[in-house]
Length: 152
Image (tube, rainbow, N blue to C red; front, side, top):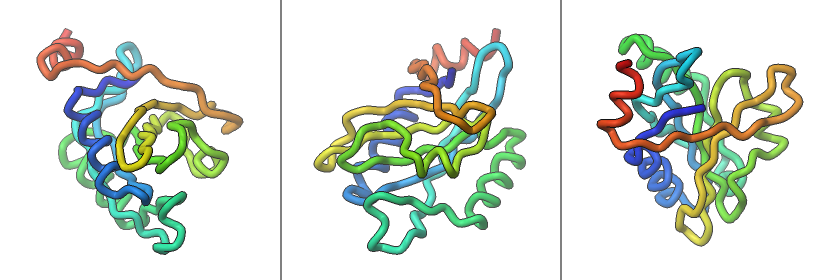
């Protein structure tokens, strides 16, 4: 499971709406916790470096930007725990392309944006054998409850 505040969800939705009809993407920064799941601390929106003609159904995050996110996380004593992106006019379900480019352990959040409006946000985690994604539970909490859940 992955913990996100309502503010995190709103940030992902807003990014998808801003870039519609193109895909957006960003890194999820936080903590891995074996007992409590993944805790999101910050989101880092990234630029879609895919050729403009392909941005409607593909997002490309450049290696230098991934390294920047990893450095940012390390400086804050955090980890990159996942990645989010949008599916314009499509379901919030991973594609074969998503599966082919995923990493085990990370959470993949997909926001479905239809006609410029975010309509669904779902999380996915890839099987270790890379065969498929399984839906991951999103625990949406207020900032106060969110902080309490990880301070116990």
